[in-house]
Length: 146
Image 1 (cartoon, rainbow, N blue to C red):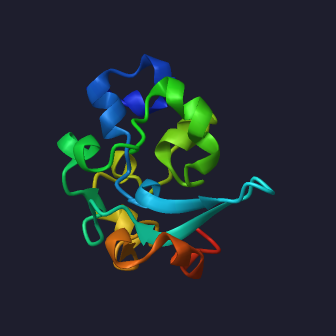
Image 2 (cartoon, rainbow, N blue to C red):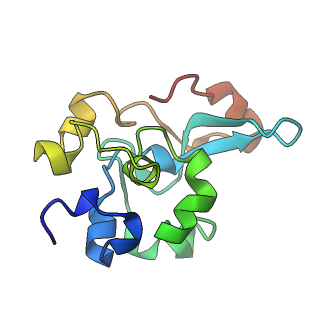
């Protein structure tokens, strides 16, 4: 990978650089509620069944579409369409918006644990979607997902 590749426009990233941009927070794996009448989007603590709530990694990333067919494959072109539901701290959203990565991002800090020690990940506070009915997701809304 190139030096400071994360500062390049998203469309210029090689596939391995694109994948490396993920900060490992797990927030994109949280189920969201989009209210049709207002268009409002609410994040919940209810996580995809494949998210490991401690590592904040997908437990079967390579085969995730076999188990979660609607899992979004994030690409430079797709970011334009879904940026509104990416968390404000997401590296893909930040770079799409032309903003720098945070100091806690492992590409800056050199340590994959800083996303967790900075309190920015979902480590330890998610609920697996297999344990909550979709009708009850609104009981798990997260007010501030900074």
